Amino acid sequence: MTIPTVILPGYLAGAKPYQEMALTLQEMGFPAVTVPLRRRDWLPTVGGRSMLPILQKLDQTVQQVMAETGSDRINLVGHSAGGWVSRIYLGEIPYDVHAVSAGQTCLWKAWTFVDTLITLGTPHVSQERWTKRNLDFVKNNYPDAFYESVRYVCVAGKASYGERTIQNWFTHSSYQLTCGRGNCWGDGITPVESAHLAGAENITLENVWHSPRPQQLWYGTPEVVRTWAAYLPGNIR
Image (cartoon, rainbow, N blue to C red; front, top):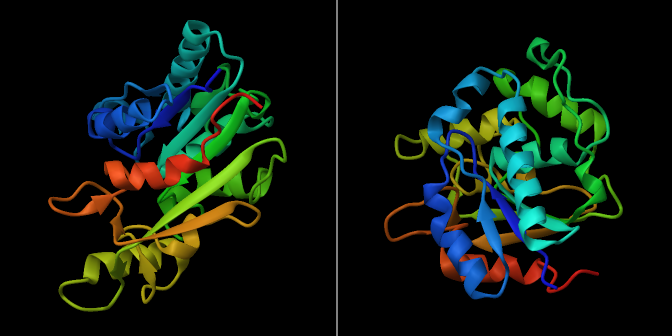
């Protein structure tokens, strides 16, 4: 039986940009479903607030997929912030670092049923003050490729070098806010070094951008999907 795959979109993204990614996986023989997010679903999380609404949507999708397929295992694919949100989902420590979590379920222990976690352009570290509280929770409680039973695959794009120029000021600033220096390679948003984790299978893909762009490769382009999807298990182990 092929393990189903659940795709978690990146920050402020809805499910629509991931349709081609899911379709490519399905054509390769991997049952794939994207968490049915809308852009407005992220609004309660803006400003470094709790990711609980996204985690709840993720868990609802995972439970539905497992019930419909009869599988007791899944794979997770998290793009951008979806990667570190997925790492919270794996965990066994209550995600109660925000007042909004009081009285709500904030513990999922998904490491017990996740086979492989693939992160795509995920900033696993950040200097940005709005994301620091959430990312510190992940870093302090689940450092690196934390769970031995889970296969971690971290994919980085190498498409743009951050330089302090008019053309590259946004890229330079994004890299600097993430890893502390702007002069490095990345996917235009996330530096290569921040997208990798110690102990994971770390992959760097040339000319791959963070988000969809006309005439450019990104993590959801079919030929790119076929590259990282090779790390998904074909059957339940």
